[in-house]
Image 1 (cartoon, rainbow, N blue to C red):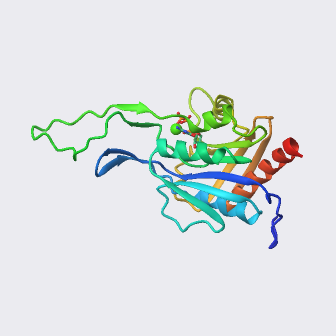
Image 2: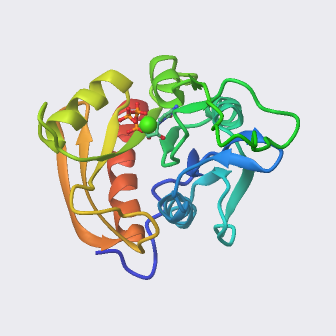
Image 3: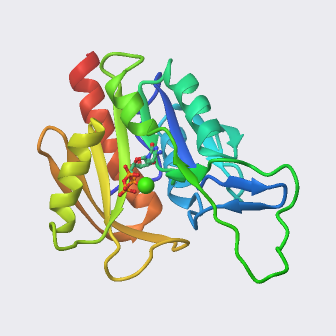
Length: 233
Ligand code: CTP
Ligand code: CA
């Protein structure tokens, strides 16, 4: 358990945390978005600052007070999130992708508000895929030895269990750690609590019992610190 005086085991480190959910505009007043609140990302940012890190948070549409001790960079779309995370990652020891980037964006953004046709017909919206930020920063490390962490909310399906799917995602993304939420029983969005399994590319499996997002944040930083110490010292 963590006492009142936190260990400054991230002192001298720069960490980047993405948080929130991106929004992809359709027209001047509408967007495609998701329900990510940014709470887990902000908990990670506060926890890292408390452990002595210099913290940059890239926040997509987060409606929460700024995390104490962190620099907040605000973005809207996945493309903006991509650019700001890649730029900040250039001098980061660790990057944690806690944000929920929209996987797709409308292929065209209408300059004018989309109107109803009048004949009852509905418009067709064509989507294009956004860049995979986590995969890019994992496979092209700006700093060798830096630690990259992804998140995944999964439900098991016919092709495999939650952990099978998560293992495959970890390998596909090329990150060092994947924080897996089993959302089979219902959504976790907006909840103050979390329950997760942290998987390591090195085979580590850390089960985190149901608890606060702050408690999960500290377990994640414990795993990051362990890997940074292995690689740099
Ligand atoms: N992620 C990202 N860029 C994207 C999409 C996702 O960096 N364009 C990151 C998320 O921030 C998260 C991790 O990838 O840390 C996993 O997100 P997830 O949506 O589970 O992965 P996807 O590859 O989009 O897979 P899925 O088809 O299951 O949505
Ligand atoms: Ca996705």
